[in-house]
Image (cartoon, rainbow over all chains, first blue to last red; front, side, top):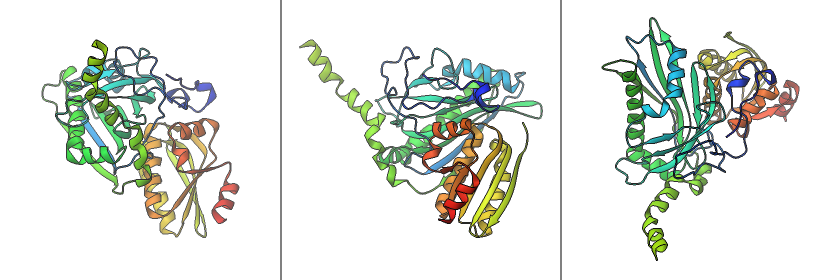
Length: 247
Length: 115
């Protein structure tokens, strides 16, 4: 958990940004079984390994009376409820506010019996948008921004990610299905959001651009922090721990 | 919100882009065009002077990341100068400071570019 900078100590945007933190703390989260985020640093697109992608998902909320500000307030408040089934988002008690840390459980690859335990830090939040940044060990080194704006008379909800996979194993998983699964995840999230405000047949527009085709081999060592490998090890050794406890 | 205003100045292989107003995702056209003009004019070092920066959101910092990646791939050295304490903190927070050289003022950056 961290804090935002008071507006009188910076620019007009000062209260919207998290304060720099050396190490993250998920002390403000309850309910998650595993905290693999506390003690980690944040890791953005510059620190990742794989190709750099910009992904934009948009849905028009035809028929909804919500303004962009009202939509973002509702999205922040009910963020976990729009996630597709099988994944969990453990929101911070203080809500989605700059500097807060959330924990999450997601499937790293399609059909995986292992749940990846990781998290995000709220990098930025204002009335019309909020941005998450991933911690070290997350499969993606990324920022993802959720925003809303008016297009004529219609409010449009948008999720835009700037992401690289974090290490070579994550890049392989990304190439063999995790990328498509990730895209499906955000499309489904936006569909769920649209349905919640009364859109009966939401259509999500997707734009995916490769910003940088090269991989950053100097960051291949990120694998030492891999939450995927740590979670897999934790899951696979669960029977041993169970037997040890009983014995 | 106010518009992004970019004033360009070139000298040899160094270009200075003086940015004032707001940087958001809506600044992409202006910033990309100013950067492209500088590089097309022969600049191998581009100094971004943020002394006039009034507002930046997460879309703006994302824009700087994509610009930085493009510069790295093209072999162009990107520097930042004129950052207030607040914006220095944002560079630190987003770890942009690990990839872009920050100088206190233009003169120092120009001297470093020529070194």
